[in-house]
Amino acid sequence: MAELKESILKRLNKARLVGGAVRTSLAFNLRHKAWKKRFPIRQLKTIIVDMDGTIFKTDSSYEALKIMYPDITEDKEALGQFIYRKLLQQIFEGTQSVEDAIITGTEFLMDAGFHKSDFERVLNVVKGQLRENLIYALKSIKEKQDVKIVLASLSSVEFGKMLNEYLKEKYGFSFDGVIGTVMKFDDEGKLIGLKRIIGTSSGTIDSIKIETKISALRKILKECRWEFDEKTSVLITDSYGDVDLSKKIPTILIKPTDGSTAVQMVSHLLRLGDMIVEDNEFLKEKIEAELSIQNENFSASHG
Image 1 (cartoon, rainbow, N blue to C red):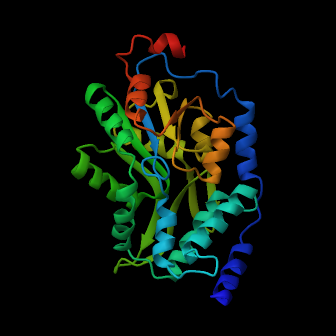
Image 2 (spheres, one colour):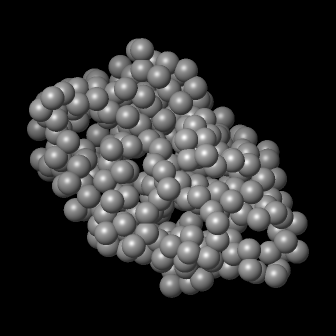
């Protein structure tokens, strides 16, 4: 096990040292007036919802790595947990970009023989960590208002679509579109690489196209023949990982009440959102109240 951990560390340390990705995000958010209410005065038309850490409390990539690398280390953690923690640490320290972490994490899954069918195993874990109050709030808003609600993730779009089908079956609610990183699978369903990454900036790495969430969002809404307007949109997320969206779109930050990750903790302590809502029994009520066009105080309190 010690030799395997050493091998993993060597691979992680070979990642590109681009630096500053998270620090840049933090610097932006500290400069921008996060608590100046930016919620739309006009009718709300689009809600963008982050997947990992928001719709459910865990991270799908974390769960996938734990499934594929289940061996317990001397530190009493699964090897997959160790890999994920190290990747997150490098992003947080600015020694690796989000995009490179996605590539490295995918390579680890490929090495372990990840198959499309393994998404079902990830979903089975995620089912127990869904934020049902948020799901019910979105369902209620969609039933009452003419809005498009999009699930946006840096993680696998294939998994996002599978989750969306489950939500439709279980809760009678589904997103109008799903944005995420596109993986490549062979004819037998084995993971063999990446087609496109949803990241924090546009470009290419090793011939893999990188697209921001906001760019992908514009495309998917155009396909829905839906006019996207930043002034009538809202983002719901759990951390500053959606900085490209929060630069332009009013942001509701969900604060976990049963333990936060380091990234979430930084986001909440520095109040990196226009509004912070605690994940408790009042979450549904609070989200609905803030986003309902029927609320007479909406324009007055957020103008």
